[in-house]
Image (tube, rainbow, N blue to C red):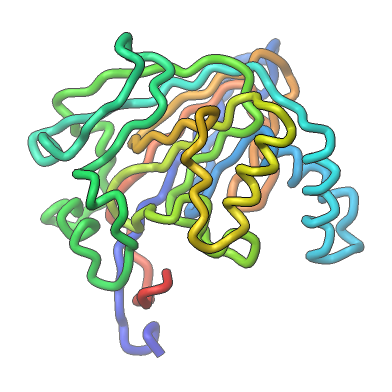
Amino acid sequence: MHIVLGSKVFLDIAQVVRWKTTLTSRVEPCVRYAASFAGYGFYGDVITESEKYRWMGPKRYDYAGTKVFLRHRSYEAEVRYLDVKSDKDAGNIESATDGNGENGRRTFWGDRKSNKVICCANCKICSSMLPPDRKLVSLASCSKEARWLRSKGRFLSVGAAVISCRNQRAPDGLVAHAHLADGFLDLVLVKDCPHASYLWHLTHLARKGGTPLDFDFVEHHKTPAFTFTSSSDESVWNLDGEAFQAHQLSAQVFRGLVTLFAPGPEV
């Protein structure tokens, strides 16, 4: 009915560019787009493992997820993410790092109250971030003041959420307070940790009202762009449910893409 009525909502979309497929391959850019999520490590392993069991239907994701969890594999990699301040965003971005600009636990966007605002129809946060002409635009390309920060080490997972990604297994989403059109990705880095600690993190993801980001081994950053470089050839990403092998890639979000439906308060 909303499509028939011509209702519209503005959405972000992430452009993902693979620069190298493997450690030894040549630079051959390959462009893909993600409308909801891009994930590495645990997420890439699950999508790869699930392909072996397509005959199981949707149940294959539970089975593959259990197998991958029991393996508890971590991967050496380097992630660089852009901390942005522009004229429009000045005073709306607050950074919390370890003092030298690297390996900070979180980067907050907006004041602390805005970090607890659920995105819904006619969201004021998304509306305030949209460009006046409603054209597709990258915050990373128009910022006047930006710096690249780095996180390097062994990761159980790297996830970049364009939206909250609510589903049956994560009722609040991977990032509960992600917004549809604020011009930012929610970058979640889960570093190597004991098996029991990772299980506790996943348990918080699976329950409503959980706090999966409130762990010492979890970093959460609001960023319009990031780069990723693996230390090995075992590097498979999950782009909106599709496997995508990439040893080296970059991603940036574009604001203001139009789709023909209007979301309710639970989007």
